[in-house]
Length: 103
Ligand SMILES: [Ca+2]
Image (cartoon, rainbow, N blue to C red; front, side, top):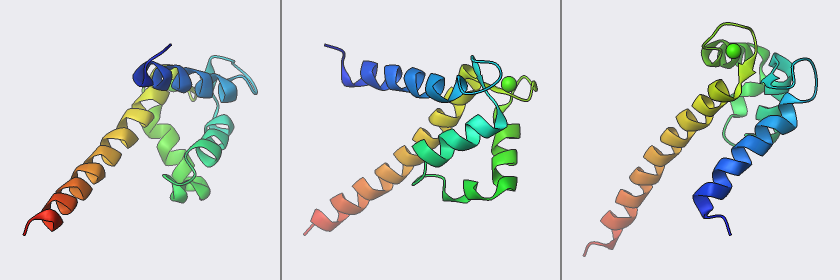
């Protein structure tokens, strides 16, 4: 039985390849594949990606090696960045909850 964290890692790999295999190079996400992935898998996190300029900006930020595609390593940096932002919100919420519990 894989642990929660192992399952999370496997899910990242599976989701990446579900979109990366749609067109062109099967080991990377094209701009369109990245857009499809974000619209489907990150719809509640990234509402602003609906506008094309936002997708271009995210694509440019992620494309560390400048080949116009997003590989798994570059994709992981998006997931990590979003996870860090979410964890910060989680911490704020926790502090608020603890604050409310004080007499
Ligand atoms: Ca790249």
